[in-house]
Length: 284
Ligand code: PAF
Image 1: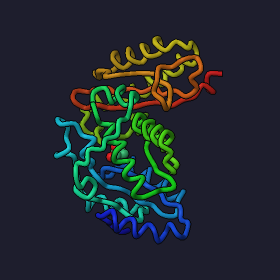
Image 2: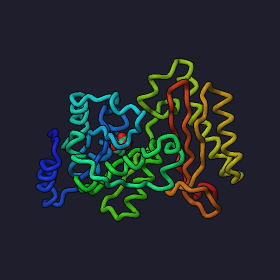
Image 3: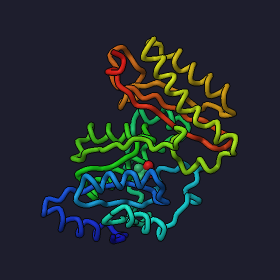
């Protein structure tokens, strides 16, 4: 595996493969790799000839009071993990390499970026789409891999690709879960023992809400069931729990056929997210 820090060098390397018609995968990350990233890279490895992983803590997706400076970074560790999972090129540019001047061009992610997680992180998804579109142009991948855990991010990237005709296929990889159903996250280690024991209720509550919605088609009732379950059976506090159309993330209506049931729950200062994507095929 080769670590590359400049756009020019990466593009020259990739050109050698592109002329041979190789299938190129992109796995965008902010580094400090964990199991979720490894699952994405393994899927990319299986389905492509060449795997490029980006390792870049993108400043434009952090708000002024967010943890850009203290975000964990460890390139040596990332190199080892990326090598193990079969990455060919680890692209780790500096901030200056990606944003040489503040040229003023911004991406406006639109209404679907201002709800769910976006409601408390203004501008976050504009920054995500900015860096992802740059990476798409730099790497020109055949396939790009994103996790379903960040369902709103995935939806917005799918909308950007659809609306702006990016020639890339977005491959989404299901949420990796602990045995008891809790979605894996690097934040789980910050839960107390009691919170860790309660946290699987999040997924159980979403499943319960989904089952109720498929039976009664009553969105408010389904949501209330899940919120009550989480707040009665855990010490967690629900930040949001919503049922939306997917990928547009609009209010649902009788013709909606893809649904996202998503939540964010605070346990003390630890914010956990989880979701279920389902279709109305299951309603029939
Ligand atoms: O999901 C992430 O880690 C980041 O938002 C991404 C897609 C790598 C863009 O910086």
